[in-house]
Image 1 (cartoon, rainbow, N blue to C red):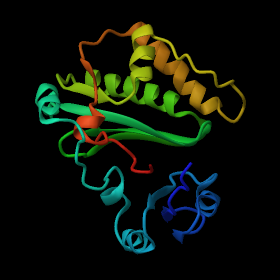
Image 2 (image 1 turned 90 degrees about the vertical axis):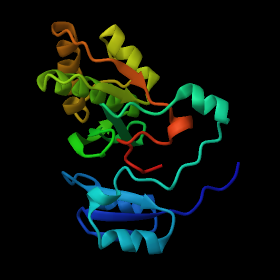
Image 3 (image 1 turned 45 degrees about the horizontal axis):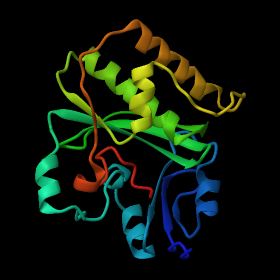
Length: 213
């Protein structure tokens, strides 16, 4: 197994702000800090430059993407439908600190964000993001479609259930309170929104991506 590349972590909001050279040092700044803002970078110079900027200008942005699919495959898939919103989640550990958000697919304007929560999983976050997106579009009487890169979340929404193996405890109660609300919403509401799988191999990371890979 190849050794993972060194990363640097910019913390805009936390117990201490700055650039940190390990995930452990970064995590110490964001743990139990409500509304923490942080992101990983490949070089110290990039992380230092980002620190001088605005968190929202960096979140969800990744390096230029070039698909490895053939021209025929790309033509078959086509372009994203920008009359849409995109949702995604991020989890530091599984379980670990989890958050999710929704953005306008074209402009990447953030429409909603929840978290970070102390103990959650990426699958739960993806599920909550998708239900939140459905509720958001219904509330705004929007005809937009919704993109997710999670087949698991799509399946859970179809079944109106959250099939997580994470056991409930006092630490993850806020997450499961949201899960219960999401399931209740699915059972009590109808929606016409089309849920579509984001084609990561063709288009790159989903616009709502937190950029922490």
